[in-house]
Image (cartoon, rainbow, N blue to C red):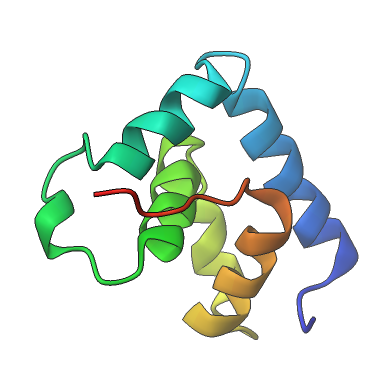
Length: 90
């Protein structure tokens, strides 16, 4: 992974904090069933889930700093490390 370890830790901490506000299993289940806005247009459910979690954790501004040395594929790789897996069931 190209991301710096301290930046990955920041992302992990923010996502972990998000789980204190939401029920992890319920949210995973909702995504797997397609119970979220514009689910019918989603091509890559895991990517949508990861970036939605990042947005919910307030990481958008932090990502702006990461774009100085990373692109979306690098950020997505880091998010896949810290976000749970989802499987499309709809």
